[in-house]
Image 1: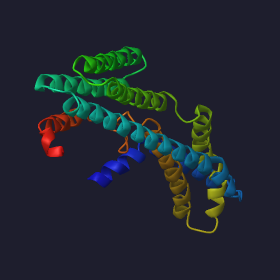
Image 2: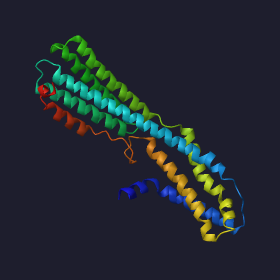
Image 3: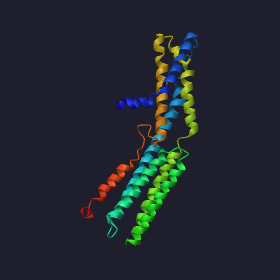
Image 4: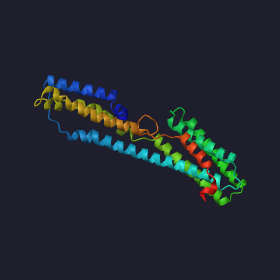
Length: 267
């Protein structure tokens, strides 16, 4: 089932349309005796290389987003450890308060990355309102007796969380070059049609039904690569199988488990 789900993601209605256009073009070229022996290097230069380059760029952006997401989680946990272990006389209410703020922060980040362009600003303001709450929470460390040097260190944790969020935000907002994407999509449609005389030329030496195998395979390969790149383009849209899932509930659950661990057992 998982294999079929993956297959459906890369072979869709667009694949069927391009295959149909390619087969019809090949049939017409065979019917009207329009044949030509085109070089295949044009396909690799004009289509395959740009698409593979775009896939590599999109995959790199996804890996960078994962790195920043891990940084947000790590520094959020470090901040929670500080509230649990560094504050003299810290109580459960204090720890639970920070746990809720951090959980809400990740929920707001998830809402932002799943939002459309109209809601984007609203969710971003909400994320920064929670950063403000964390900043106020850290400022209370001084009132609870934490030395200023340690307070400064915890404030650096917040700074790194904000830095990671901003980096993820720019990955979300800026994609691979739009002109390169438009170029690739244009040639994905044109190449199977333009190469129809070449496929018809191959049909002179083989049975006619076999001559349709080549346009089908060409179209299937090119459109599948284009679909893979499209699914990797936005690593937060939850459409492709390789998207990043911001699991705020799991993060909060883990904080609750950490909260129940006595600090003495970690000494």
